Picture 1 (tube, rainbow, N blue to C red):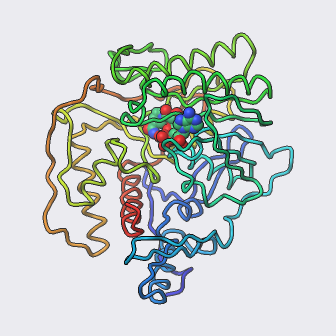
Picture 2 (cartoon, helix red, strand yellow; picture 1 turned 180 degrees about the vertical axis):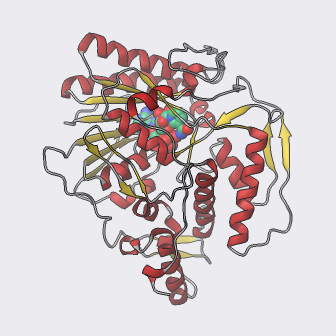
Picture 3 (cartoon, rainbow, N blue to C red; picture 1 turned 45 degrees about the vertical axis):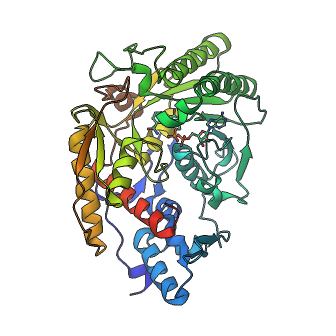
Length: 430
Ligand SMILES: NC(=O)c1ccc[n+]([C@@H]2O[C@H](COP(=O)([O-])OP(=O)(O)OC[C@H]3O[C@@H](n4cnc5c(N)ncnc54)[C@H](O)[C@@H]3O)[C@@H](O)[C@H]2O)c1
C-alpha cells in the first residue's frame, strides 16, 4: 500500500463527528490547523529508525508514520536508535512543517515563557504552524529542548534559555506566560523557587508587557480554588486554600500572580488575560512527574499494578491538550479580561478513571497484536495531604464569551496518549 493510501486513525468528537483539524475561526483570527500536521510533530517515534534491519524497518516506520500523519512524512528526520548500545543518532528535520505565510499586519511576535514544557510546546506548534514569530523562554527545569527541537533553525523561531525570575527584554505583541513547574513533585522540589517563579517571574513578564504594550496571558490554575466548598467551581468563587500546606507554594503563588496581573491592569492599563486551567493531559507530558493520567498509563503499559491514592471516590475532570490550546488562543484573542476557566467538565471518580485507562491500554495493545502475560490490578494507597476531593470546572463563561467548549472525549485523548507513550517505549526513551 502506498503511503498516501495508508488508513489513518479516526478521532471522533463528543458528537461522533470526525476531528480532522483543531482550532477555530473566531474574533477575526483564523487558527485552524490540520490535526495530522500536529500529530506528525508529537508522535515522534515514527521519526526514528531502529538500527538493526535498517532498510526493512525504515519502510515499516514510513508506513507507520503515514498511518498517523496521512503522509506528512516529508518532515520527519531519520534519527537512528541503536538498540545494542541504547543510544540515538539525531539528525535535523529534512524539511520544516509548512507554516502559513501571513502578511506583516497579521503576523505577531509572540513570547511563550515555559514554551519547552508540556502545554507550552503544543502552543508553540500551533502558533508556528499558524505563521507567527515565536520566541520560547525557558530555563528547562521541567521542560526540555527536545519538545521544540523540530523548530530550531526555523526563521520564525527562537529558543532562549532564561530564568523568568531575572528580567528579560524583547519586542513582542503577545506574551503567553506559562513558566512554572506544574506537577506536585516538581513544584514541591523547591517550594521557595516555585513561589519566586510565580511572583518574580510574573512581575518581570508583566513589566515587559507594560513596556512593550503587549497583551499578556497568564496560565493560572484550578488550584486557586484549593479544596473547594463549591461545586462545580465558577470563576467568582474565591477558593479554599491552605496557605501553609505543601501545595501552597503553587496555589498561593498562582493566586498572587493573578493579583499582580490585575494590579498592572488597573494601575498601568496592561491588557491581561487570565486562564484558570484545569487538569490537562496529552502527549509530551512527563511520564514520571506523578500526575494521575501519566501514572496510570505508564503503569498499565509496563504491566505494573495501577496505584489509586485514597479510596478512589475523589473526582477529577480531564481536558485534552488540543482543547486547552484552543481555549488559550481564543482567550488571548478575545476581549475578556476576567478570569476564565478552561477545562473539561466530564467528571470521573479516580477509581473509574483507572478502569478506563486500563481498558484503553488493553485495546491499543490488542490492536498492535500484543498479548500481556497478566491483567494489571488496581491497588489503593493512602491519600497525600491537601489533595482536593472534588474538582470540576464551571465553563459557562468560556462558552459564553469565547464560544469555546471541549471537543475531545477523554477516551479519544487517552487513546492518542497511550500511543504516544507506547511510541516512546519503542523509541527507547522511556
Ligand atoms: N498541565 C496542567 O494540567 C496545568 C493545569 C493548570 C495550570 N497549568 C499551568 O500551565 C503552565 C504550563 O504547565 P505544564 O503542564 O506545561 O508544566 P511543565 O512543567 O511541563 O512546563 C513548565 C515550563 O516552565 C519552565 N519553567 C519553570 N520554571 C521556570 C523559570 N523560573 N524560568 C523559565 N522557565 C521555567 C519549565 O522548564 C517548563 O518548560 C504552568 O504555568 C502551569 O501552572 C497546567
